[in-house]
Length: 418
Ligand code: AMP
Ligand code: GLY
Picture 1 (cartoon, rainbow, N blue to C red):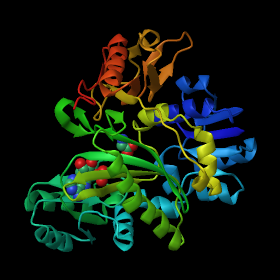
Picture 2: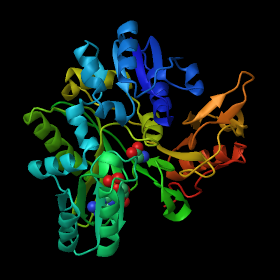
Picture 3: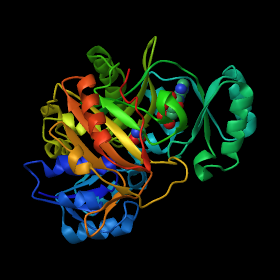
Picture 4: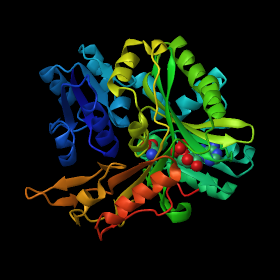
């Protein structure tokens, strides 16, 4: 098969690695891809958000399968456009991707389908937000409705903090994303993420992970896209996993289909494991980054076959096999991230770091003509270690991190430590 993959980050490097390893793959084209991905497929310089450009590329190459990595083109309707043009595309339609694109849409859908989640109120002005904050007892969670690159959530300790956050969002700090707000009941418990393939009706468990969102050790510092992850999610027991599939994923798949917006693709379910059971924190309509870097290396079944089954609606006949081992990924980022940072610093030692129990995924690097590797982004490398258990996987990942010489980089030292 000829496969077109859209995206350029660490998640897409992991997808490219898994797709290139499939016996079904004859040719892989990546748009835009990256220098590090060029060993896995042919990279074409069309950006992941250039919908018209991607459509022209698909028409030109005639792929048997298009795989969309990031959320922005999904929410913008890339899969709708590709499907209309006759291409088989993996990922939800714009209507179904609203589960990530609009937190109000997601909460209202869960409420209709009886899916466990915190109480919430949708607000469009400060008066209604103030009333909802008071009704929640002051301490609550304020969220911008739309995509805000992980920054549109404020967990507020009291009414003043919540009201200030609401005012700032309504003022346009996140543009249109924040014109609609959610005021949510603040729930507590460990977090975990569960992934599922959904083919419109049937759902299949597609791994679990726990990520580390804060920049610094001890969960301190600003929120980031994710500084590391571990799979399987340590707190998500098999019983809880079954409960999430039965009480959250299946009712969602059935409900979306019944309402005429069937979900096809991979669903990322962000969960809080409360005293009364798992509740939905958020949905994403794609694999996570860096969660993909720990989930895909543990998948023993063929990813391409699973994606085709998702598009064709045949997941009911499929099962996935997983490695019993654990995976831990440590993200190496440029000093300054998630704030301002310098680009172009030299990274060496990556050849030494690679090994049987280590996979080096590149999230933001360039390679000079003479082979020099340089940092070209905030999150730069995701170093995945594999092992019989979390401790072994963690040691493998950090041994590789320690072999990498990059004075301008930093990472957390406590990924998967507890
Ligand atoms: P989100 O972007 O929706 O995943 O939210 C970011 C983080 O805010 C989550 O990982 C949780 O730690 C926290 N959070 C979101 N919603 C709630 C809630 N209703 N109660 C408590 N914490 C929450
Ligand atoms: N690591 C969080 C995400 O991909 O949304």
